[in-house]
Image 1 (cartoon, rainbow, N blue to C red):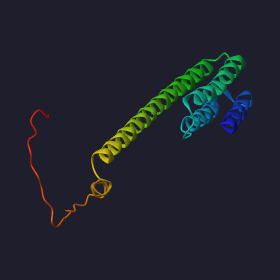
Image 2 (image 1 turned 180 degrees about the horizontal axis):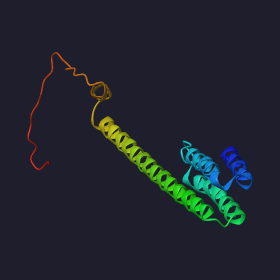
Image 3 (image 1 turned 180 degrees about the vertical axis):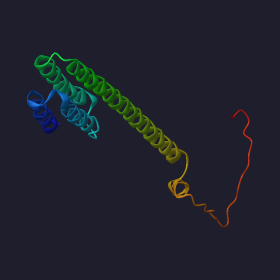
Image 4 (image 1 turned 135 degrees about the horizontal axis):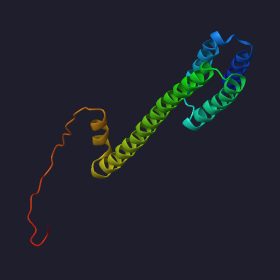
Length: 154
């Protein structure tokens, strides 16, 4: 991200030497750099916000300080709106990723609880057969089964 911020500052230096008719060329460069910063995988939204501010504040100071033309106000507004839209998209993506992560952790916890319960209720080999989705019938020879009703036992 530091390299992208440096690249945007270099792009801003071009604004002072450029013909006002071609002001949109560095604007597109700044917007492209902001898009790249907003799409760095694994970068938290706070860092994206800081990076966008490190680009936006010097841009506004440079463009508005160097020229009073309407194109300077127009480009600053355009870049600001563009960065806000990208920031909102990044925030939405991060909140979705956080929800998905939390749901996966919750599902993993429930699966572990279910496994513990199954291991307490059934023999280990039966639980293993259930996990492998196979059905085996255990056969025992010479077995007596006793059914009884004990009074007072519930």
